[in-house]
Length: 433
Image (cartoon, rainbow, N blue to C red; front, side):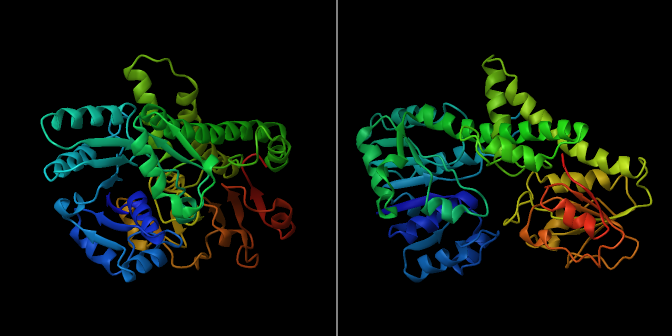
């Protein structure tokens, strides 16, 4: 099938490349011509495991192309909207890019089209867009159908998530359109039970509810970690005890610095904004955000307490800048937030990340003068005797104890074995461990 994907960010590029990989002919559109030029050469502007390979494969097989022409994109019968919807000042998603796509596309329509929304949009957007196109095509000889197909891609594992999904949610009131979208995924050989059909409103809410629930689970376990610190419990043991209950499960029960990234904070803010706007009482989701914000303060307080609240002479090594492992995404990174706060308290900070480019990190920390971004994970500054682990990259689990002699380690992701660290004469401080 021929389809167009509007937006070449994380979601759009993964969606387009994966559809091309399973046999469809895909045009990916973006207004950034410099980005398109690089993508046409197979150069990916962000790190996403396995993506470069399938982009190059799609280009080679002539199933994947890139364009800035809405006229070309509008030739496809199925058009996916995958543009960003960033958080606005009031918490509501900013839909300017989304509506620019709508207005740019409609100028070229002259036959039946299916618009599939993958962008995370405010509740009710699918209906508003459908009503808009129904009015627009009232006296025309073609129809525009709107369908919701929310994405559930984890950064760092997005290609695998697309190819082997937990579920595919299709929100549409038109059965014939639902069947067409269903066929798009046919070559993935997905079990029938993994397709979940529902109304567009339900699909929109499923996306928000899923991310909000996972975020709430993280905030819950982080709040429990503070109790564990107080009574001397071990969160690794608590996790095993809780997670063994099949109703709870082990996933998202790792105490740490909290959640970040482009999805959880934004989706929680959007759902909270919707509740406020429609006078729907909120408590749990607001507290989820508050606990997450307080967790970074709690971690820094632990560091301060160990140094009797005086960090002004301390030089600190920080491992991890990205919000999670296997990505170079700095959006809402708890590590970056910790570094910004500590820069006002400590003498100097040395920051290392295995995937984030130095220029990208410095751009995020451009106004801070006491930050050095390292090309390797150990600092040559002998005055450094404090290590913070802020992102759970696998390489941070392996330590050179000789180079860390005399250090205090503050493990913000609980990835180290306390006994092993302490047996090597190093002080260890985890989150609820």
